[in-house]
Length: 51
Image (tube, rainbow, N blue to C red):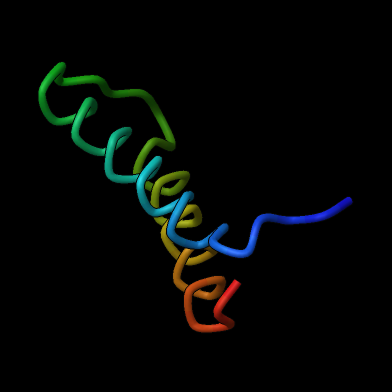
């Protein structure tokens, strides 16, 4: 499977959209902040690795 060269930037864009929707629509569920935190860590690692 070929991963896109700019996977980190793509995931960062998705994360920002999701984060914005959560704030605007006041979405909340148990574990939301843990899930978003893990997603942010994965994106950060990919950006550092230049993926």
